[in-house]
Length: 474
Image (cartoon, rainbow, N blue to C red; front, side):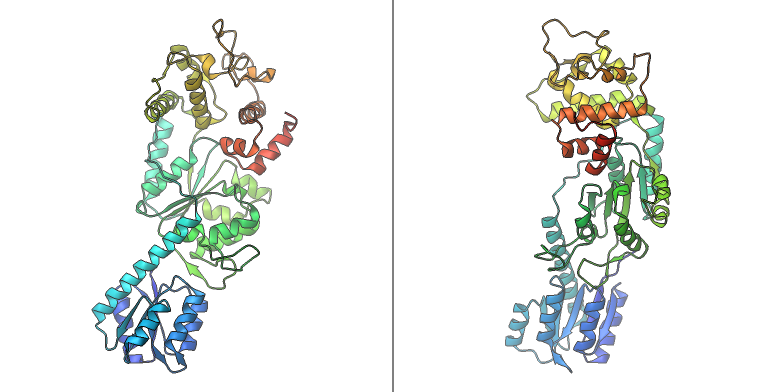
């Protein structure tokens, strides 16, 4: 949906309004007209405006008083004053009150159009700067997707095709497979590539604050709302909003997201006015949303709205050809970042074991293994015992050299030996998940917030799994 900037012409001269309106409509603006202060202020309360052409003298009010009302309700609104009774004093007063500029009638239409264009550019800068102050800055690195497996290449080909549309996209896959990387690819391969890309983890925002984070709020909308806040939806205008862990979104907010997807309109918390933006929605989940719908935890209508275009990112165990290129690329990048460090290489036995490992944590786990290997490797050669701690990965096949200190990540849990690909007895999926969660918690010294981030799940989901696997006492 293309968004046309909406301009209100508030002037009691009907003929002049008509001439200006025709000119602006030809330029692609959406134009509203009002001849009295009352009509104009009613538009302000009912409709989101981008700019106002305001007559200094109105039949039922003073233009400067109307200007103050306009700026009170919408501080970032840009107003250009028009009058046939221009004086230096009134011009100065209008500029002090927040008017962008001041033109006398009869005004040159080309000059008016240029002034309005500058005013709207100013508004855009104000909105963007306010948004940047309210959102933690995230640098989007250059997109580089490493891999050569047929499944990955097929996924990338489909992603390029889907990126060209404006329809919502649902990305599915296990934790750690790289769903956010595919979401950024959708954005960067789309016509919106030069616009904003705003990622947000729907499972990491407290339920009580989620609506305000997405749609913004007005001053005094609730306890603690000391000022106006622009939501992530507005910041992503003309760009892409990526909602990760969409399955964690509360049902009450799912209704509002559905309404926004259908109409492109929303209301800030504490505001009655509808606002309209042009945003491409990309969502991701490691859950089966179909099962969530059956369990009553996800709205069926929203599921069908999001499920139009779906991308499934295969787990790393199903694309073995990507394991070594990913591992070597990560080692190369880390060495390049820290030029004082010697380049690390994988021992032949390590390369073989990496290929046969099943990676319950997918690409994220592979990266963690490489980080551990770089820290513990001697002479730049990463051996199996540098990656897998003692008693955790076939210690009988790969003994640690005499005198070698044990890894700081050593795990004495006997269940962990089941992770060896050389083992004759393969563990169940639950055993693998339990051990992976336990290892991650041990690595971060029990910090569940950090563990949830590494595991790519919400803190609430992690608490449920810790309780279900009886890990609370670990």
